[in-house]
Length: 221
Image 1: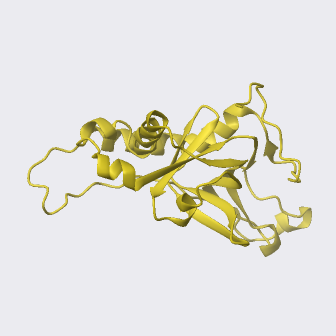
Image 2: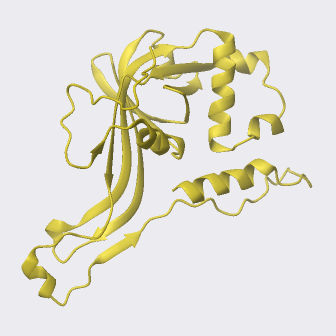
Image 3: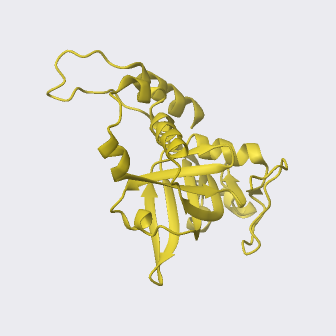
């Protein structure tokens, strides 16, 4: 069942610190401007972490892959942990000990389930495509039945979530501020580069989705 409260509860087994946030908007914003989610689960008594494309719809995160992929072939409900992280800058301090990273991360816990309903599956595939390239689904040819059947979709209901954020300058020891050592922030930005054509693209115009992706990820990161 989807959460209805404005705050998302921390997972019972997660120890959180002063940088933790549980409000729904903070968690959703981190998820919505991410490019890759790392999905952790246990298969055959071995821990696995897989980077995957995803999309959030309300309190459900959808991921997809080939039917032959191990995470798709599990075909059963299993507990999972999904993380999305943005690196915003390297924090350069006056001592090695106080170097750090400015970041935003979201850690999601829930049950992975196979999406077998065709209507839900199609909507998830549309949203995963449009998460990376807004509007792209409507720019390309329709998916064939063979492609649809060859693609698996999993859903992760957000049962618990924690966001952690670090921002700001380094925090040095008081006596170190007197040192003649540079300290500050080295920004790290996610940017969409200039597109270049597939050599068999002929003279097709650049699609609108490319500009929308550039705007989405450069303004929200």
